[in-house]
Image (cartoon, rainbow, N blue to C red; front, top):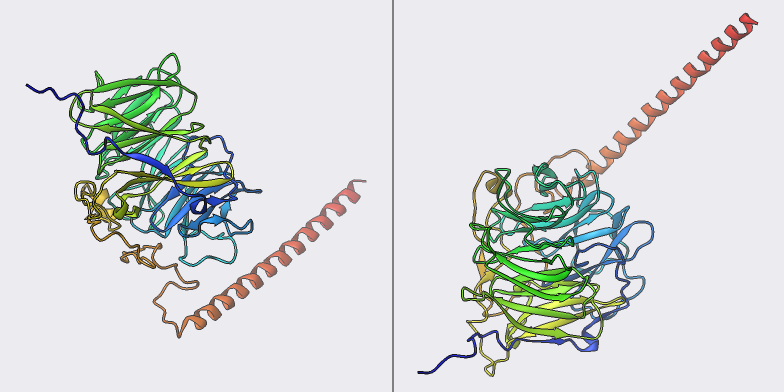
Length: 472
């Protein structure tokens, strides 16, 4: 009777490899803000990195193909008055990115396909609702234009970016600073971690905490949590003795962990990046020089260590490419963008295969750029799984993705100046002339009002002088 000693897995031999020097992005002044976010966001078209900037916050957006040394005068995305703390690309439009800042605002930007000549300073929309700095952003995985933000005011706000309206505000669920927020695969639930050491599962539309677990990790350092495709929660945190620890939890039974493993002693918070297609989770610690990866299965011990990618330089942050941006011809199953102090370096995770044919087992259908729901449909209680696409022929991002126009959607077409009516190219100059005339009339009226007030003040001063003279 034969005994199987080695666990069978097609991902057992996954290995990481840093890109060649000419494929890196050099001379980027990565932000030095002390905040536990990834500082980097990437999609199949662009790479965005939070950078050092005087007089406010900024981030740089580079086309993926623009490798090599970045010009010191390369245009930035600027507009925040405080440091940028988090950025996140819209999953349904590769040209739309959201940024959160220490100045309490969220800004949503439309990035052109061409390289701009000067800094981008005008966001499509600014979202204001938090009273303290905003450090967490996350787009809804299936609903169009739905964005979540979490701030230092311990409040989670869910926005309809297309109209600028607050859809939901979760005010009283977290008594302390929120460390992480994650949607499940269809966006019906949230997993949050908080400084009070509690892991919560929240139904945002009902405004209820569905399940919670106190001290999932007993240490005081920040926890992180992500949903797995089986509906479990994968967490990273610290033990009471400050050892880093990972855990797997079943929300239906939070009493005992499905798995709990101690790792090492280090101060860096472990950022988990989960790939639902392969059920592999990659752990990147800020200040570490390695990426550990584990496969999550239904067999004990449930979280299986695969390997570690190690390098010499510590990482300041990390970007994680969506599956549709990978090179399937090279059996690439993940790609990271590692931030150094002055550069960004791609790291490719590959499954070694001899065949050049498309590997169906490595690339199941994956979420594509089409939303499954509109914001109003999701808010009314509808749920839908992501719209999947095949990667058999690779994924080619469209030159300029146009969103399906919905009522009051301002992401697709910037509202024209002047009266809100349908305009053709021929009557646009008339509208601008009308707007100019209206502004001139308003300025004239304000000037007359100021003159009237000055006359009134002068008359009152004269009366006051006469009264003073009379009393003398």
